[in-house]
Length: 303
Image (tube, rainbow, N blue to C red; front, side, top):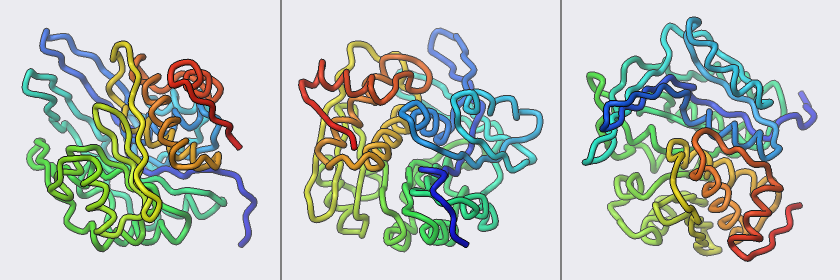
C-alpha cells in the first residue's frame, strides 16, 4: 500500500510519572519519559510526530499535555505505567523504579506502518523495553533513531544497575542514528574522551552518533568526521530532558537538510535554550535560529 507523507517521526517509548526528591526534602511530581521531551521539542520546532506509548487507564491524563502541543499520541492500554522516584544526592542522581511499563512487541509497529514516516524513534528506559527483533523490524519501516539509555539500565528489585548493551553489535546495522551521553559511551566502549567514544562506536558498526556531554554535543558521521558545538547556558534550570531535546533538535536538523557542522550548532543551541527553562523546549525553530545568530555568532539557513 502506498501512503502519502503524513508524519516526520513515529516515536515509541513510555510517558512516565516521576517524582524528583531534592536534598532539602522538597518533592516535585513531573511527567517525563524519553518520547515526552523528544516529541514536545519536535512539535515546537514544527515537525509532525506520533508517539506510541503504554500507560495504564488511571494515568492517561498525563498524555494530554503532549496532545495540546499538537503531538499525536496513541496509547496502548497497559496494566501499569512506568513510574520512578529520582533521588538527587551529593553523590549524584539515583533512580528508584516504583512500577514498570509493559515491553513493546512487534505488533505495536503496525501503528507506524499505517502511515508514511521519515524516522522511527525508540526511547527505552530499561533493557527489557525493546528486543533485537523489534529494532530490526522498525528499521524495515524507516531509518531508526535510538536513544540507548534504557539499554544500559537493568532494573532489579526496583533499583537501576548500569550495564553494557550486550547485543549492540547485532543491532548496529539497523540503527541510523545512535544517541547517548558520555557515561553511556564509556559503558559501551570503555573510552572516556568523546572523540574516542565516537570512533569506537563507528568501529562497532554505528554509522551516525549523537553524543552529549556536560560541555556540549558531538556528532560523528562515519566517513565525514566528528563535529561539535558547546552549550551556552547562563543558568541551568531544566536539566531533565536535556538528552531527549538534543535528539529532537538533531532529528529536526536532518529533516531540514542541515550539514553535520550546522546540525551540531543547531542541536547545541536548542538544548541550551531548554536547559535554561524547566519543562520541554519552549521556543520554535525561528527562536533557535535567532539564538544561534545572537549567541553563537553564526547564521544557519534551513531548507
